[in-house]
Length: 172
Image (cartoon, rainbow, N blue to C red; front, top):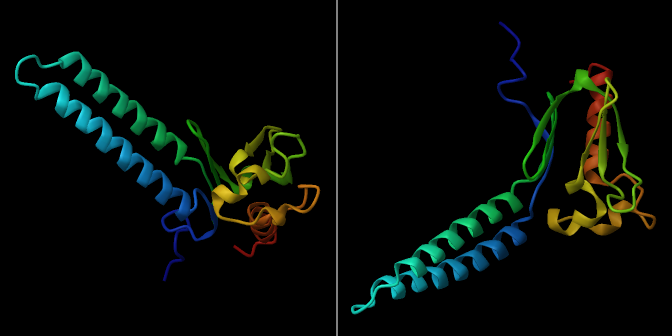
């Protein structure tokens, strides 16, 4: 009997992304804006004597831009799995295997205070802004996890550090 391949079904230890409340609020706002824009398109096209096709085109274009913006806002994520860490930003995603990772740290910079920084063996530093103290409510977590100075390891950082230690000791 062969051992299961970890890459096919990696076990997820921690996942950070937009909270359910945030997703519901965005969905409600997007629905209201979609209905408003759609009614504008219908009114512009269905006027019997003089249809305003440029106005309809502008409304549809704004709806597409709005949908793309919402998709980008909901895209950032941070996952800790048995195969490594995935840091997904607005446009770029990094999948980092445990063998590439040297250490997991906390960012001390003012604007990204408390964020998880993954330091790779080649010296590159990949920061997940989503894991910082400013995004705690966005993730649906307590801002008090970061401590009074915002430099204590919160749930995302603790999960990454603990899983990295387990990998180093061969427990994964």
